[in-house]
Length: 215
Image 1 (cartoon, rainbow, N blue to C red):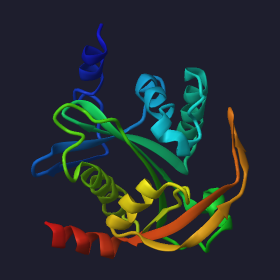
Image 2: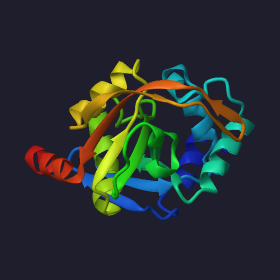
Image 3: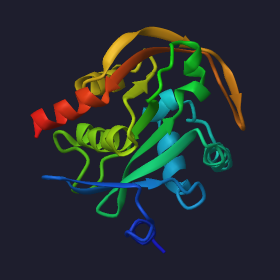
Image 4: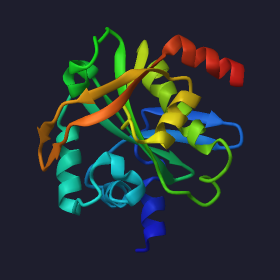
């Protein structure tokens, strides 16, 4: 079975989506919970690319990536999702409860906060590379994280050196709240080192207002 055939078979709509959003010019984007074993090829291929260096997994074997996402899958506070467009995975997103994460040591968590991480996949035929592609994917996921889940504020903490991610987030309306230092922690198969990050927030009100304005 070719990789293309495997992708079409795996993401042809048989897996139930937690959220769908149809965007003019981009089609229907579906948010699927990650299945660590079924999605391992995609996950390993993406997180080990040099462009994903800030995720800290570039040297991981497939087994290490599997163990990492099996661990995430076992938690009630952290969740991973693939966004799929036209049967092709286009982005990896993760949500987490800030109160159960190391970021809680760096700011005062409010009820209704939700933390998010994102990794845009490599350009896909007919999708990636088009103007507005990354912002469209981010907006579609924020629609799920904020509006769909009924949360009041999204929290992000990209590496302070990751200028591209910071520009993408601030362009989406996230408001920087200064730099923080995330403490080192141990996870199965990996130790997350201390990290200097930019803390930023986006309220649901601001997101929805921005969506109305841009629409």
